[in-house]
Image (tube, rainbow, N blue to C red; front, side):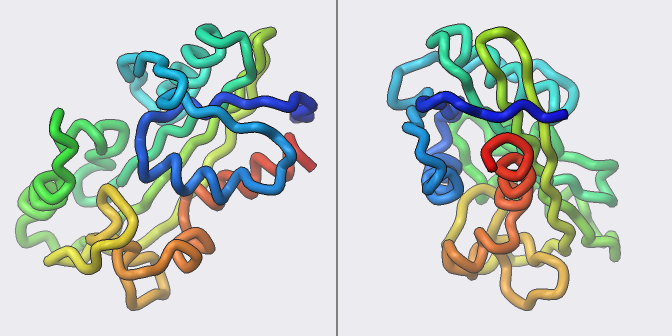
Length: 198
């Protein structure tokens, strides 16, 4: 049984500007004041987990311990079937310290080589933790195919090379509303809201 969120403040354990922008929209209307780890100047913990769940919990717990407030974290990435699920939990690290996702997308395309299998999934895990240690975890997933060269300048990360199943546009070509209706993060948030906020 999921625990209901009854607080009035929530720490969003992220420093990623693109994610923060998405979460602003996804968390609106909850009647909760959302503070980001970035705005509070919290350190980013090293992501040492081997799964999205491990890393989401690690980030949420670090923010919760630093503030004494409930915290929400996301860990997400691109899982490419022909690459055995890579880059997966290393999706951000493939972009290097400069967060160069043009280079990261080129690395994915190069690793795929001539493979006819261009299928992939965007996966997002959300972890909500309370100061007493209890937590709730949900996953959102969207299947799609990878296009090359990348298309569009919207979104962030690997969005320009990912076309969600059944759509002719990449996430990078969609506007924010179109992407939000389909995205892995939005799908995870629907579950989290149903479990903990409604």
